[in-house]
Image 1 (cartoon, rainbow, N blue to C red):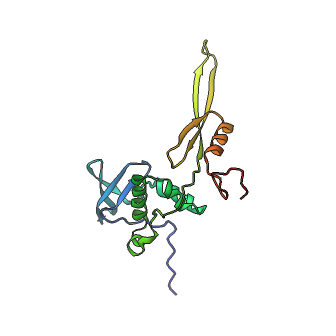
Image 2 (image 1 turned 30 degrees about the vertical axis):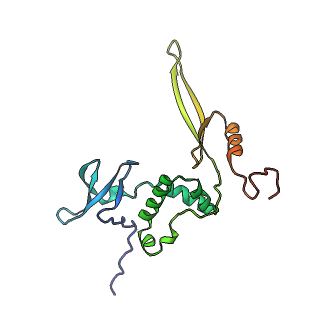
Image 3 (image 1 turned 45 degrees about the horizontal axis):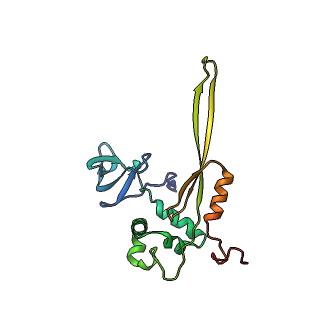
Length: 198
């Protein structure tokens, strides 16, 4: 009885077609376009010919990944809370066009067969503001005056960002939460009447 072929443990990398936008692995934001898919037998090689920064570069297939799609990831996060259309209402025309490009790039078959699923504006939908708080830490090292001690100081900052264009930094988590509560639209009640019941 023949032995069954063992299953492949490592998933095969996704194959990109010429014209697709890709990113180099480990280099966030360094993107290029696929010119050609390369297969060679001696020595065995699978890769791509890319245009990166105006130059043609030959890259192995394992070093090519999907490009960053920040607006699409943010839109999906809002869709998880059923606020996709409210997020789109916050975007200006240029960023909405970028979101639609990213969605089309990530879902080519869906964009071809069902274009109505593309993120779009709907009349009458009011924008909902929700600021995101990100904590950052900066490390400062200084030596004492006689050089005997290394003093390490960490400076924390809290950044607030909202798709409406809000970008602020504060020095404490309490101030960040207070500013977020002031900026965010209360869900479940009329924004013009903050004291109304949900």
